[in-house]
Image (cartoon, rainbow, N blue to C red; front, side, top):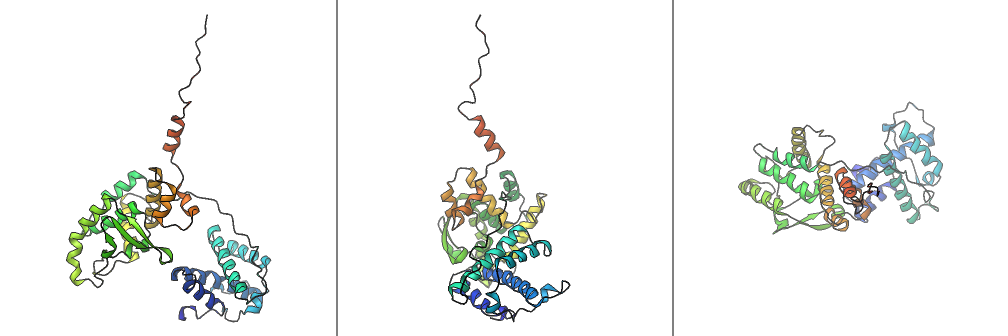
Length: 326
């Protein structure tokens, strides 16, 4: 493939394998490409003993072959992790992702019988500190919706309403077609091209109905007549346009648009649903998570919930009787 022309076999075959056989998205395959190409460049530095002042980003890796890959050991990978930390300033999460890419790649090489042993079988992942997902408070969410205005207010209100109520991903939202909505059910295509049903509450249905009063007038000239959300040019709305819509309205709240993104709207939906009593298993289905552990990051509780839990303890009203009997 043209986009993989600067890397050698079998890395090209691996990327095609994860996309076409494992069913990973093109974006995921591209992430593997960037991660493993960087790893190849580090191997080239070590193999050719390149100087420290060489331009790492311009290193040609086409001569890295399978025989050299088979000589790589854990110590060299740990040295690579140290390089990413000290020289490239990669965060722990970024380094953890690169380790996962290397492990997957070597597993592929071993299963494909391209190498006799898998030197990465015992490669340990980086332990990450669990952080609570950033989200809008309920009050912020209401103010965010109330502040939406402008000529595309009905469309923008509908977009943010779906984010906040359904917890869908950005890619899922922009790909919605009008035919995907049937009554209170919306069909979306999530990660790995997996289809799931999203149930629409009254707020979503009202927002969609209001928006459709202007959307139907765009249909005759729309380049994609099935798209639910259209841009001002009557094309299917792009991810960047949706991100811009969210940025504008986040700034109205005085919040940082780089911190409070479209994905944080998804975090908000999940957090508010969990805090209102939604079962963790149900939340997993709503969000389209493959693993329950992914959903569990939303099971944090607020300070008010902690205070309420302590106050409602059955012993909270039991007090020592200090009255002495004479």
